[in-house]
Image (cartoon, rainbow, N blue to C red; front, side, top):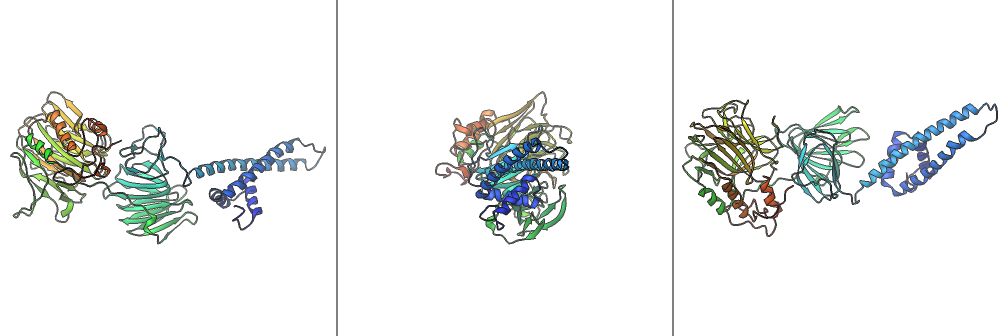
Length: 599
């Protein structure tokens, strides 16, 4: 449209603007004009000059067309008035269009790269919206004072995320993980859907997660358990690359329904052309796409002082997951009990999925699997519920999901999990009311069906990649849940928990022995079980012994605040100082506690 690059010359450019003013500009020419005004400063200057002139003429003609005298009986009077009226109407409509286009141009210019605009998230103004996602990584972003900070742990409801700098990774509560790289605009629609208006994203959706739909201006990408990347350029065209698994790409009609679809497999790339409404294979470099960031998977840095403090408290069962020797007779991998007279354990996996449970660097890692996999004590725990008991452990999840971590079940039961006496879970997407991905302590006595039970839920989301310290205490008249050394829930009342002298089987990693239900995905370490109630002081001392061994102080800074609120612990990547871990049996995990700050 500019004088310099329009092959049709200045007169043609002015003709386009005249058609716009009169409301007769074809849609294709309107899009061309819009693009020129966004990209060319000379074109914008010409636009302002011409439209200022046209507005002045419109004002003059609006008055003169009505006020100029005409000869009496002029046969052209009616036709002239009709022509003038139509022209004024067209100009009026054109100026409305010009106003809308000017607004669009201003908005578009504010999004051009290089402008020092802050990143912001605008939440939808609707009552009762549920959380859609949680920020799990953010770097290099700048926000205005007073805006809701986009930091690790920030929960997001449906809304618009305008990213001007840096990158943000968000985990949708459905299980999808998305990395957004600036400049970009992403509309969060729900926990299972989002629309990329512009920019670049990488996405990963784990097997077993809910279906996730990522839209673009004219298409939708539906995951089929996969990792993929999508770009939307300034013209509205999209590029889709599949790294693993498959996706279904749909061109959408005016009503949002699929009019054409194509399935993409691993390492296939297509371009979705907005102008021609087509999908075609293309060869593009990897540098054009982004991929999600891996979460922190470092093991827990357990110091000798922490292990000594646990032994001093005298648990009867203490699994440290240092090693898993193979039983020569059965071929099963074993777990050693390192304190008291309690049983050891064994690792039960299907031969087709031997890596579903692994002992790595002094911790046990549970991966997603299609078949049953769990840890189980060698013998039932006798009289565990005769009075008080305590279960203490550290956990780190790898994604938002509903997963059972540890349970006490009725011996001999191999059904659907309705014979639990006690259960520790990562609760997410349940039918009860709680925040996403929080610790749950369930107690049922007598063990029975799903229609009753006391529930104690944590207050804050357990972030993927963070180690969290969990303690559950049962006494005959009270149940207590501690997270990171702080009491977060308790229930009191006569015979709230109930006693019996029955034996119970201890299992870890899934819903009892059920082959498919609630498989925990993540790591567990330093499991201890006591035949008594640990005191609040003992629990706090255990937590801060671990923290102090990793450089934190119990009375200083954000770490103390997080612990007092039962919040999570940041991973090792944010380490301060030299980053050298203290002397202990492992070399990574909690080296950043002293300076870590969480939401």
